[in-house]
Image (cartoon, rainbow, N blue to C red; front, top):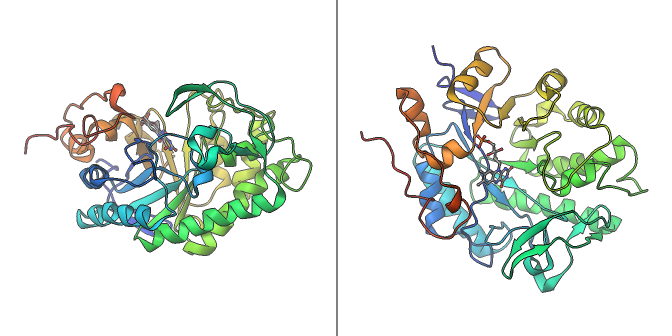
Length: 352
Ligand SMILES: Cc1cc2nc3c(=O)[nH]c(=O)nc-3n(C[C@H](O)[C@H](O)[C@H](O)COP(=O)(O)O)c2cc1C
């Protein structure tokens, strides 16, 4: 029997099946970080997931890293999100908001008043990013002061409050992909000598402080964390990732969390084996899964729920397709981040 379609609980959240839609940036918001009506349709179409995780949302404008990404700070942003959340709930689904502060993975052209991106240390990432003026090299970010770190933590708290106020069932901290929390965590991007840098305990402090603030706002069982150890993305590196992630996960308070979300991308080490025994709460796995591999993970008890990204993007009715063993639509990469309805809300569903 399929385990995918059995209900379970992630922290305080009951989910009808174990399929989770991965957080995916789709860059359809306006220049003020406000979602349009298309986003309402997009999320409602995918409400058959046990849990939908929203695309990465910047908690404050200084955390924006990509064109046309949404925020959760202004009235207009909140109102737009409320429409999407209501639509998912009306369709019987559950939805978390992912909070994503990109730190140094940004550019003055994406930030208010042409400000420099911020980071734990003034170390530029290698590579380029897409801006309103085309491809640009990353710049050297500005090191956050201690007071600004506290302020940034506070911005996650307020964003959590705002997300819950518009009806999200919970919030997920984006601790992966080389963005701000992982920049603090990783020795390659953090050369601070205060309480937020140096030892692994100090490097993990930012992520743990942010989670504490989010949990204080949301209450226990409504905050998830996404990590991707050794994901080779956004020029992130750490001298001893096994030690770093073991420390981090051991210091999460499982009873306060909704889940730990671990997405692996070709790491040589089996981080699930390393991390799962260190976390007593719900453990969800993503990254390159198929229906068969997901079913296997659930049956073997290696995961409590399974996370699908591109397959959900291209198949709004993914649960139904899995139920019927139906073929899947192929994702069209050219429209992942392109404006408009094409490749966003027009993927076909199965004929009834
Ligand atoms: C278009 C696109 C946008 C993404 N944006 C985000 C994001 O905003 N936050 C995040 O944590 N991961 C993001 N991801 C990564 C996915 O959450 C997921 O980890 C990844 O797609 C691997 O799962 P898959 O193999 O099932 O697609 C994105 C992936 C895609 C394809």
